[in-house]
Amino acid sequence: MSDPLSTRISDKGDDLIALTQDLIRIPTLNPPGDHYATICDFLGKRLSPRFDCTLVRAKGTPGDSDRYPRWNIIARATGTRPGPCVHFNSHTDVVEVGKGWTRDPFGGELDGDRIYGRGACDMKGGLAASIIAAEAFLEQHPDFAGAIEISGTADEESGGYGGVAYLAEQGWFNPDRVQHVIIPEPLQKDRICLGHRGGWWAEIETKGEIAHGSMPFLGDCAVRHMGAVLQAFEDTLYPAMAARHTDMPVVPEGARSSTMNINAIHGGQAEFLPGDTSLPAHCVPDSCRITIDRRFLIEEPIAEVSAEVIALLDGLKSSRANFDYTITELNRVLPSMTDREAPIVTTVSQAIQDVLGQEATYVASPGSYDQKHIDRIGKLKNCIAYGPGVLELAHKPDEWIGVTDMLDSARVMGRTLESLLLP
Ligand SMILES: [Zn+2]
Image (cartoon, rainbow, N blue to C red; front, top):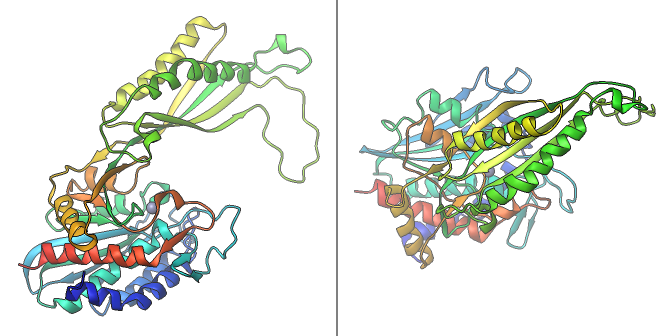
């Protein structure tokens, strides 16, 4: 593809590499939500020659404090004539490093076509690609219609409440001011992500009665009751979930069914801190808790998702002696799906065809991302995830992003801007 904008983007390859490295070198770890101010300042300096930049702190949202303020940036370049606004939204936070790295997680090392680092693919590479695409477009077409926005937002990895959710509540994603949204999450340069499954998180506690460990018959073991809950999940819930399949194009294939993870289990006395050499006291545990992470399909109403678990627990209450429980909902996220005929979908699909010479593939994400807030709070349906990178590398050791993939997806983004903002 050798149109002028594509050539201009190709010529910015070194700039794209340096920008991606600079972003990776700011360790925006979440939790705790570190260096949001640093990365917003960096983005503001980068974008302010061509964009009007606004910094927004999501005061009072979960985790926001003077030590870890939740800063967001929204940058807007306005055209010479009225027209739609195309918004690129990237989260700036990254997850913990974890074990198993052979590269410096915050070094931004370039090796061949790959740039390594925590957040390289999820999603500082996508952010960098969208910036290069927008800058090249503005140079190529100074006389454009409408507006381009680029936002860098906090806390996506912990639910987005200090980022996109807050901005949507404040009106930044109102359909009156933004018409098209692209979230450059790492879904691969030839795929359009239409949406994501839902999630329901809850804590279940089983109750018991404390007694001396040498005479457990004098008490009631909450851990054994929880064992019965887990067995009921194995016997009933997991087979039922596996039998359900969605029409959503979720990848990987295994996530096309309902799933549930048990995130945590704890019963009895508190775990010892490292270095504590005490011996355990001898007690029958009177409480056991698990946290469940139930991911559900667009075909499953949330009310049925929770009712199914509660019915199973109530069943144990009537069949098992002394069984008692409480269940507390921790969070819920509804599924989100953009229509295949939505303007942003058809435009990016055509851009993939034009730039890459291949048909776009449509996918949906097993886990949620910030589209849910743009959809539910912002009431803006015309939103997709599209960006470079391999989803399976996200949150893994030696995470990387391909330079060629970033350039290709920047070209698709640039072509999309031409389709939407040039009359
Ligand atoms: Zn992400």
